Image (cartoon, rainbow, N blue to C red; front, top):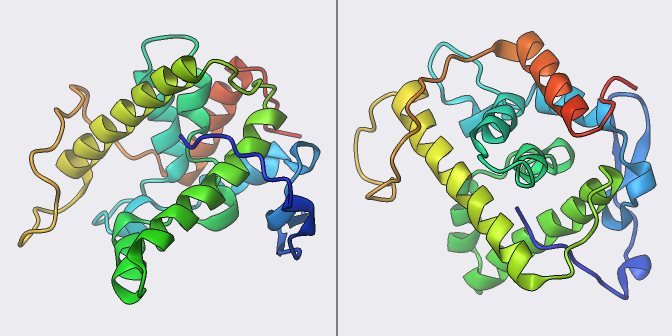
Length: 211
């Protein structure tokens, strides 16, 4: 989950147009809450593969990942944030950790890449969360607490996904030690079930994902 951003010069950004599944054209650089159409996001997320598809013989989608994050949240106030935490990927795809690290490795100022990716995600999250009817945080401590819980859920899910979906790693590269995986094993739903399960959970937080 990325902190909401307020950029006074956002209106001056050159437009970056993207066509969504419905045919709607959205300006990613200047995305407004009223331009967020959740059926388009659902359509994308149930087709985007986690780990760039490196899950042998199965399709494990970002949509399912978001649903499992929602299910893992123990507090009701955290569930909407857990569900929506990767919805920006409907606009920009899943920028995997290896991809981000490659960009860092190829850039003369690696820290700038990390900051840019975080800023882009936060920019999109701001519009998505507002479109979902989630008010911006006023209390910094409250934001930090929710963000901490979502990060912990995401980390536990990553450990679970590694255990249940990936082939054994033939070499170094994973951060060690990893958090404790969740007790329930992940069974990939595939695209169609992931779509329906995501729609169900969106309805639980008051969002119509069917249009």
